[in-house]
Image 1 (tube, rainbow, N blue to C red):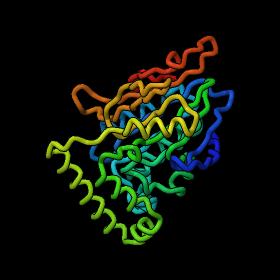
Image 2: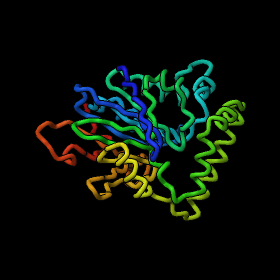
Image 3: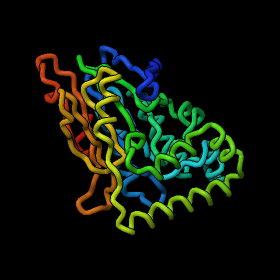
Image 4: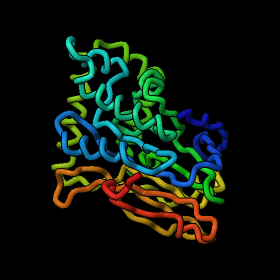
Length: 285
């Protein structure tokens, strides 16, 4: 199915955001994030593949960190097996997305792990790339979508790192390096991240004031985001709400694989009545 092209809106107090007006035929919209797909975690990949094959959504928004790491779109061809290109992990993921795109519109927003996923891979999978943030008009309400990391203002070290790696010059330099070198750099960054987690570091949550400013500027009522791995719903005051998506790890005890779903219900006038938080295994056609 053909994805919609978001319009870009400029605003001085927040980053420019995209705008999507949901078409009338969308009755059900799914949101997922932070799956961190990788070949070494086949159980989570299988759960995602099954969900993608069976969801009844008309549109899906992937709000970042679909992949544990992404070092450039050329990794797909480079990872292919000479005898059977379909067996590489990246190609398996592409096939899942391509098949799902026959039935529903798929949108992808960059996360802190896969911000180098580019238009070549997205186009091949028929995904529409989104600005962070993007405003979605659906069901008579405005929903502001973000990965969430840009609002973790208290983590000043990460914010400096984010500004560096999101710059066009850094990405051009990085993607110009040989693939083996890029993989080595990415592995080193992942190891640093794991060391930081094991040290007991408490990660910053989204800044409430900045979150409210984003919502106010976009004239939206609810912020939907991932990144923090702390699923829940938070009242920000003044009629504003923050919905946090779950990460996915089906090997964990208990397993984690959750979808936030919006359903258009003309008989309901209360926004919260449209929101469901459901296990991926129940998101059936």
